[in-house]
Length: 140
Ligand SMILES: [Zn+2]
Image 1 (spheres, rainbow, N blue to C red):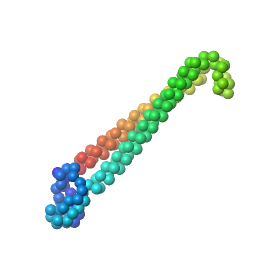
Image 2: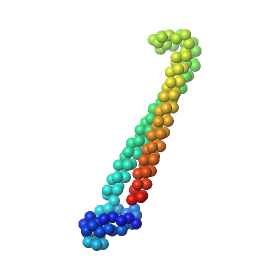
Image 3: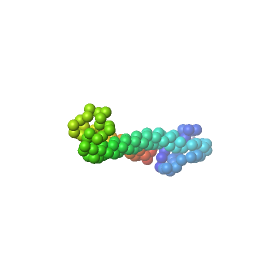
Image 4: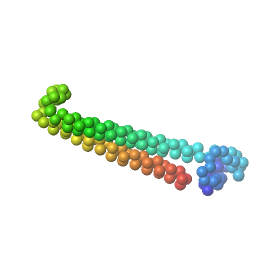
């Protein structure tokens, strides 16, 4: 049961848990709306939670894109063992070995992993905020 205060006469009215809509006060017979305020509060929490979830999904996707680029970088450096044949390598500092290309792949690999970890962390916090938002409503 939940206790709410009638907006018309100020008496405490008992209602079943989870009900909402229009109710008639047993003291003054006036009708009043219940749970509109709580549901809007839930929507605000849900919005923050879903926004965080959206951000975490984008971070994880970006991380996977970076990982893909890193893997492509590795295969590129592995395939171009004859470094002098690459058209893009002429515009660079023309390194004697392909070590710089491998470093770039390693860097974006690390960046991809960090982005995925950040995305997972944000996703967990979004999950917690969604859960606590629900818990707050259940406590009420
Ligand atoms: Zn009343």
